[in-house]
Amino acid sequence: MNLGSPGRPAAPARLGFALGGGAALGWSHVGVLRVTEEVGLRPDLVVGTSMGAIVGAAYCAGLLEDVEAVARSFSLFDMLGQMWDLGLARAGWLSGRKTTALLRRYFGDRTIADLDIPFHALAADLVTGEPVLISEGCIVDAIRASMSLPMVYEPVLLGRRVLVDGGMKAPVPMQAARELGATHLMAVHVSGDYPGRVAASRLNLQRLRDNSGTTIATLAFAMMSDSLVEAQRALARPDVYLEPEVGAHPMHAFHKAETLIEIGEAHARRHRAKLVALRDAVAGARRAGRERQPA
Image (cartoon, rainbow, N blue to C red; front, side, top):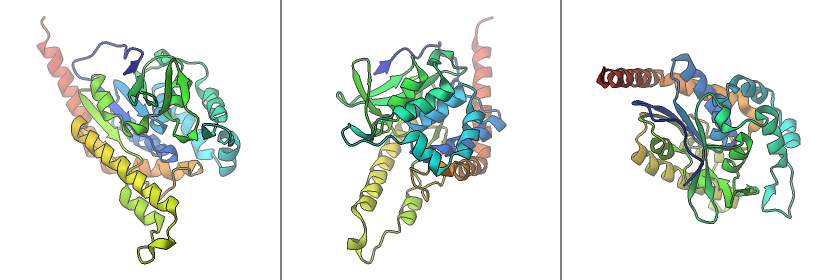
């Protein structure tokens, strides 16, 4: 289900970026995008889920360097002061007002139509269970809906829809990018690296009772999410699939942006040949399309 029209007419060959959610781990998208820019891989559309929507919108708005500069200077104190507005009598631990104010500081009142590259944010309808693609309207509202992780943030009421984090339906919005017309696709899964998560959890295999329920539930949720991503990957068949090794870091580590960005960049550099091949494939498909057009 689509909130708004995807907008621009389809081209013979269209490159899409599908940027997945992962809270603070999504800073690694910045490092990946730095390498795609370096190799000249420029998308025709970007679809983001949760943190992927934040970074994706910044990229499409030409604000990636500004966001990176802020992220690198973000301290634990900044995270607590600028993002956390705790309250128990709500539909989530955080109302999201501080996060919305922080987003508005950078995106202002811009709309999705104002962006240089077509952008779409994926959310999920809590009532119908449908994925909802937000393709028009206020950028901040779209991001806020896409990142409304249940229990952490209050859901967002947009129109008649009650929206929560798009990761509930598609942690990496690969299929959405295909449905929007992406003939070529790069997908980035920043909340994967399950082996890294297990190692970082220090799971006690000798005395299972010594493990906290939170640790076990977190790993179980990650396992379930990875299964969903793998199933959707099989359907969408992205041309390039990246999964930075960020599992050793907690999802709330927004103050570790510098490290996470560097991990994303290093991972993309290891797969640079694949990115170059994708760039060349897109260029070749566009040339072939032009040659097929009648004179």
